[in-house]
Image 1 (cartoon, rainbow, N blue to C red):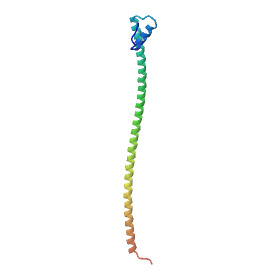
Image 2 (image 1 turned 135 degrees about the vertical axis):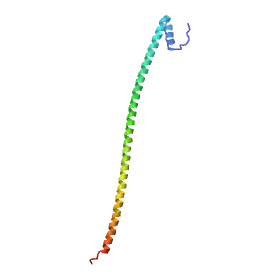
Image 3 (image 1 turned 90 degrees about the vertical axis):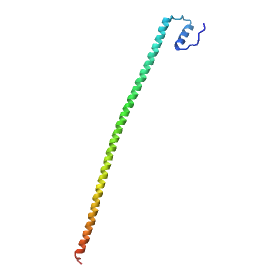
Image 4 (image 1 turned 45 degrees about the horizontal axis):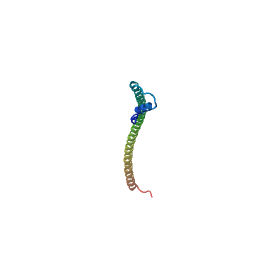
Length: 127
């Protein structure tokens, strides 16, 4: 009795069983065994898929948490940058104000020197 080469796992099992001298099972029992093997294989496959889905969900949750933290840090950095820009504008306004005061002081100083020169020319020299 020559059998063709096995084409599936089930065929391999059946070939091994029939060549070992054991009597072949009736077709109804074989379907039941085949169904059991398929169900066990599907169950194991589903379990692996569930575990992988759980791992991927945990990884996704971790990435989402990191993304939220990065977005919060970016918002905080933007706030600090806006505050720094406000401080720079305030410092520039203060510098401009100080420059105007300095110009006023210089103008007053020139007037004082002019007045001192006028006073010096109209007052008699004590020598």
